[in-house]
Length: 193
Image (cartoon, rainbow, N blue to C red; front, top):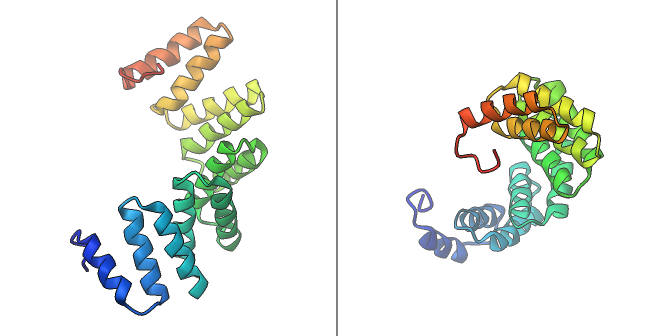
């Protein structure tokens, strides 16, 4: 209850003197995470998981590792979560983005394609596929993915930027202008446009 009213220090002091338990460690981890002491949060999430295997705590631990850019540890945790619960689209999406961060384009493509089979309306999946194809230097597949994202959401500014940039490199002035103008009309202060 102290956490809900913003009394983090008092909450930590109260928890510190309580008996060691999964609840104590996970509550302390949550407080540390909320006040941006992520390394402390990781320590307590791990202590909590030593006492009890818990799905939500694993997710929080993975997010904490992701936050401090310990990508390999976050990937390992998220892969375990997806193995246990393949329908968790949010974690699967984060996993795909982590694969891109680690330049694992093939794994990222497989992940975003799997996401698209479940949810065809999310333009981010096609957009991220475009980024993965760019890593693989597959220009045609990259542009097709960005166009797919655009068809799904014609206001997706990142997609508009990628399309205008791609067509600029191909010296296709009409397409470049089309996507650039559309992007600028939606986000006139977008630095990349």
